[in-house]
Image (cartoon, rainbow, N blue to C red; front, side, top):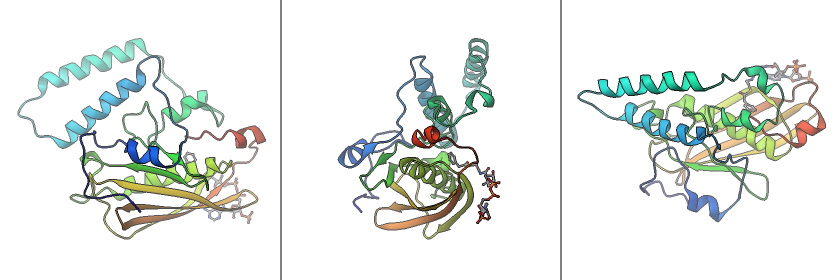
Length: 232
Ligand SMILES: CC(C)(COP(=O)(O)OP(=O)(O)OC[C@H]1O[C@@H](n2cnc3c(N)ncnc32)[C@H](O)[C@@H]1OP(=O)(O)O)[C@@H](O)C(=O)NCCC(=O)NCCSC(=O)Cc1ccccc1
């Protein structure tokens, strides 16, 4: 494990470490910037999210007006997406709206995973105060969210698709805010429609949590969907 928990840099929290991603692994299910500017918009909103959750202000009523105007504008110029637009697995836009990895979802950290030659999926990231649970620690539900997504990605890397049926998270040591974290997930075995996968998150040499999960392949999944398992 090479992640240094004490390292800091100037990148916004909630972004991956490009140096470590480039060193090992192939970018996996990365989402390019949307030509409409939606990805950039989400990026700026992510900044706003971090600032609102993690700052004290004397008076931000002017910002409330600005944001209200922005919301009104987006409501006027956008076309609402319906869940039925994503009726099938494998629609790239589907991934973009995902709360754990979606490039167009300001809620997502986002994860920028790489896949290793043995099909392990890895994501290095840091999480800021907007993900805080106990003081100085990442909220346990956020750890579970990232695990669930990483496990799904490990299934995708192994060319299978599954719904989470059972997700067990074992929290071994507090997951620190702001520190570089390394999530890794892998598919362990498949029996019929049952898929087992497991994952870990480390801060430096410290195991913060691990996950064990059972996924069930939905009935009626086609070979094409299995082969092109962009999930979300
Ligand atoms: C689809 C299924 C999981 C299973 O229903 P069916 O298709 O009718 O299957 P059936 O009941 O026939 O069972 C087949 C076999 O499996 C076994 N088994 C089943 N369950 C369990 C169990 N809990 N524990 C242990 N075993 C269990 C069962 O005994 C049987 O075994 P057998 O063959 O007799 O030896 C259904 O319960 C469901 O929809 N649940 C809600 C899922 C949901 O909403 N998850 C959250 C959303 S996904 C997400 O967010 C993450 C994500 C994001 C992005 C991308 C990817 C992932």
